[in-house]
Image (cartoon, rainbow, N blue to C red; front, side, top):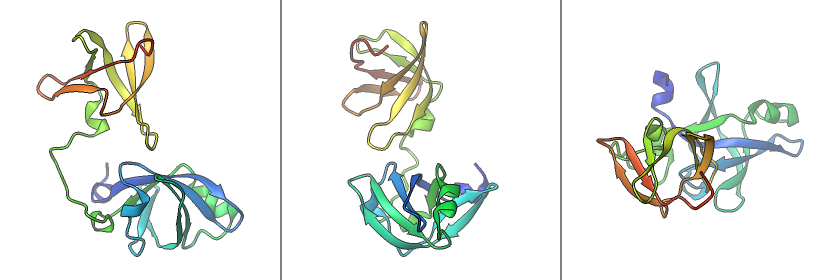
Amino acid sequence: MTGAESELLKIARVLKSNGTEGETLIGFRETGPETLKTTEPVFIMFDGLPVPFFIESFTRRGSVRALVRLTGVNNLDDAEEIVGKDIYVRPEAIIGYEEDDDELTLDDLIGWSLLDGEGHPAGTITGYEDIPGNPCLYIETENGQAMLPFHEDLVLSVDEESATLTMSIPEGLI
């Protein structure tokens, strides 16, 4: 992560363009649309540098999505250029944001061992897919790679010292 990027929080991703006037649909990650201060700029990385955009219009679409119109994104071509890009904000742009350096993130789990509910090795966490509302872990098992939903109800224990995650794994997923 670059120095400029480390000061910013990744909060969403541009999912697709919407219409011909530059509006986009964005999906939020760990925060929801209700926590974003729309008067603060958002940032999109171009060539490794954060480019600021201001929100011209913002309409919530469910609990993890919103239709957004950004300054400078005026047509379908402009919108298509930012599809798939992550959206970042400064911490002060999140209502109620408090930095918690002790909290584990999905990135922190990469390389950890995964144990099933009985304590048997199930595989190694090799990555994740941060699908809004349904994050999933990629697990390398002895039979190949698997994708496992990562939900707090399935987590039985977390051991940072031994880098192991114990989960109740539904039958047939691995």
